[in-house]
Image (tube, rainbow, N blue to C red):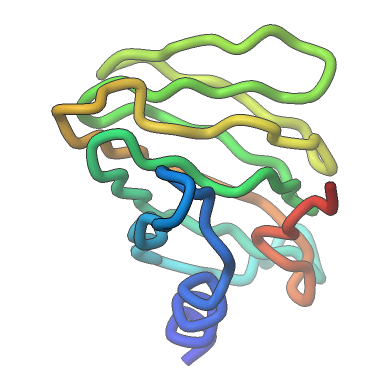
Length: 134
């Protein structure tokens, strides 16, 4: 049930405009599993996929939990505050510390889709994604 709530909540977030007057639909987030961690009371692990259409991007955000991302297909450009933007190709991965501000997360291609596998550890009541204010 929590997974459905997360997906519904993420689908309501605003998206980055593609053109001056049009907005792309939000990236597709699919929670694969979510489990409480018995060895870390109050914490849970989540595994999810994020699908990006060609040219699609996420809003600037932060995660309350720690995240590890692995590119399943395509190429993803990612930038955490204070670091350069890096484009990761299928088979490559990165780590984001809890509380990191994720300024850029986008499909590096305007013609091919891209897909991420994300593993997170966060508090049972912590938000997966918090939009950043301008």
